[in-house]
Amino acid sequence: MVSKALFLDRDGVININHGYVSTIDNFDFIDDVFDLVLRAIEFDYLVIVITNQAGIGRGFYSEDDFHALSEWMCRKFESTGAKIDRIYFSPFHPTAGLGKYLKDDFSRKPNPGMILEAELDFDIDLKSSLLIGDNMSDIEAGLSAGIGTNILLAPQGEFSDSNLTFIQISSLGEAFCFLER
Image 1 (cartoon, helix red, strand yellow):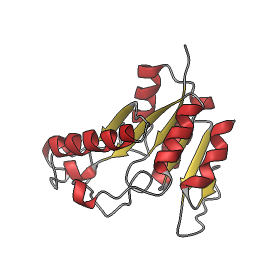
Image 2: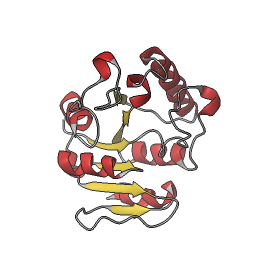
Image 3: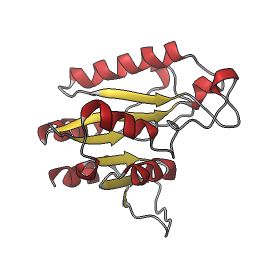
Image 4: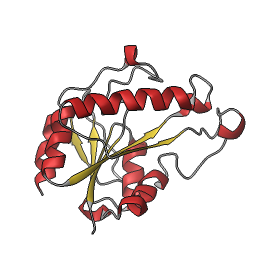
């Protein structure tokens, strides 16, 4: 059975990006994120998080710290009736990573590695799927993978790149209508 998915970046889409967010005390959910995930589930979307986590590679926090925060985040979603189906993360950084994390890995956005891995794991129809990110690297990854609808969350105003085709929104509530397609 082929599925469709809502791909979400984490920092800047699910939570406010305070910079290298790694603990519960600096994890603040963005308005409408729980409702967005509930609506996606209502329309039979899988919900997949794809997140670069260079803070691991730079030594700011550990993979265990990331997993503990991810488990807490998923429990918060579950407490609202929503569900995150899987979280994919890339701990690498091409210039500032330490040790094994120093590399330009295919999983790191703007590369489409995390999306393509999810496609295989869940038999996802990428053309019927949506991606919401807050950086052009998210949009580039979605376009490279062949995701049908790529949405840039830019609450501070206009962002343009004439070479890429994407939708721009200023709040997550604006994304609800794209899930009904």
